[in-house]
Picture 1: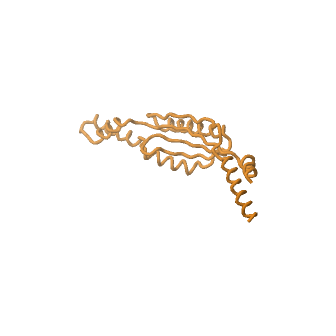
Picture 2: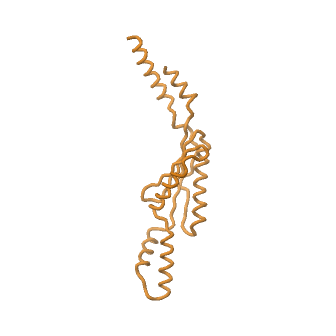
Picture 3: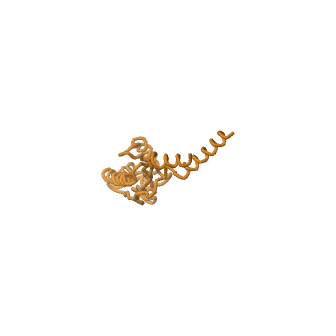
Length: 172
């Protein structure tokens, strides 16, 4: 029974690979945000100050905040469930600008390619929509060396346990 489960796990079940890439999105620093908030609160009657306030308000409206990134990740997770035979998961670290793109699939090389392509596409979209700020890749996706599922050892032990129980029941 243990050998049968091992053979099933090894030759019938497709191995699953997982890899991830991490990107960051930031188009302002904390000091710039504090200065922008202070600029919009202090208004003066001069025309130059009004122009500065309008510019600051427009820039403030275009800034990206962690909540925006979380909402975008939720939308992306709903829209991108299957990409080129791979399952894509977009995860945002709460309160930060870090986005982790995790790709699972049966082909290790394809998973790494999809994760890296999505990171590159995110940079292209960001650069086309925003004239300031930065987006970058913190960690490139690497080709996984071993699958995370199925566990051949675990399946063999389960088969051996079922075989032992079945043989005990038959002998009783």
